Amino acid sequence: MAVTPEVSWMLADLNSYFASCEQQVEPRLRGRPIAVVPMLDVPTTAILAASYEAKRFGVRTGTLVGESMRMCPGIQFVQARHSLYIEMHEKILDAVERVLPIENVLSIDEMSFRLTGSQTRVARARELALEMKRSIELRVGSEMKSSIGIAQNQLLAKVASDLEKPNGLVILSDENRERILSPLSVRVLPGVGPKTEARLNGFGVRTIADLLKRDVGGAHTVFGSVLGDRYYEWIRGKDLELADTQTKTMSHQHVLSPIYRNHEGAISITLKLLERLAARLRKEGYYAGKLAFSVKWSGEGAGSWERYEKFDATQDTLFLRERLRLILTELPRGERPLRVGVTVSDLQKNEYRQISLFADVKRERLFDSVDRVNSKFGKNAVTFASSLSTEGADHAKIAFHRIPGKDEV
Image 1 (spheres, rainbow, N blue to C red):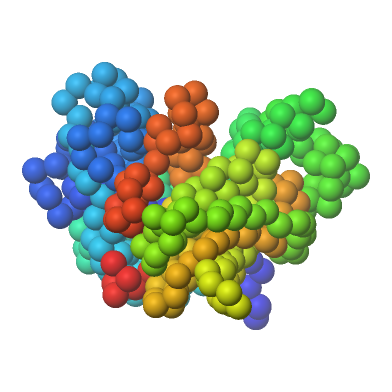
Image 2: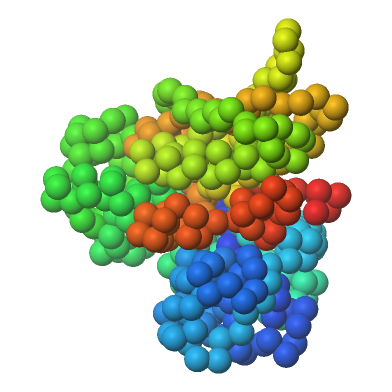
């Protein structure tokens, strides 16, 4: 006899992942307020991750180091270790797959699981979630806590995973879904950013209860697109996919001055162009699904060279830098570059894009903070070390959406 599903998805979110990794491998850091930073001894740089002990003082991703020292006396800073986070990620994948097969690796600290058969019963799903937590702590470490959300679709599983942190477990089913969701701000819905929230507020929609009062036509109206139809179904528990809506392209080009007309100079300038382009994406409210690089060689009759990468839509500078660096590993040597350019395309407005329901809000806050600081104090007030010289040094290679292999570190 077929089982009528009560829930269909589970999502595991590792709590304060980078900070927890550091506390796991360094027992002296356990129970102490710590922050992971791209570089040590730079008070103007932004924090990548904070432990829960530091969060109690208000320290968050994107908080400037100098500010965090005032907020949390005694906070300890740890330089980010890309290879450690990848190693721990691989151990976590092994631990969770001993309980359930992974459907999607969403980021370095999030993964989702499709429930089938008896697993779709609330009681059994709860048992599996608790077993998964034990497996992570046993096989990876006691500091590696996770918040797990279980629901009828991936969007609600994501919402559920965010409701209790750290080490939470929240299940949304027909019996409790409306009661739990109704008082929450619409901002908790993945894909609803500041601009969409402001639009919804303008229609008197501030909570999910307000949204639930709308029929499908009303939801369409307040969102201003078919996305409203999708949210109408999602918040009522229907498992629904969303199609792409693509728009234009953006690009930055630069003719190299003579001192930069070499392999290293071209890379350095290109990375600076990409930083500007990523900031522009955020300013204009776009997400890019494709990144292209081109170079024109100097000399009469010289040709050009170009490559591109495709991925899930993002406006994340670190992620785009990682993809660009992969392209630049193929950049031919021996030629003299004259002009370099970077282009992002497959652009989608936030309101219309295919939502990666698991977008890293912490990273979005980080780069929102970086943009605000640079707007106030100058465009390079907070930047990457590799953008400060032509050496091309790459600091703080952090993996979030895409998980590189160890050979890339």
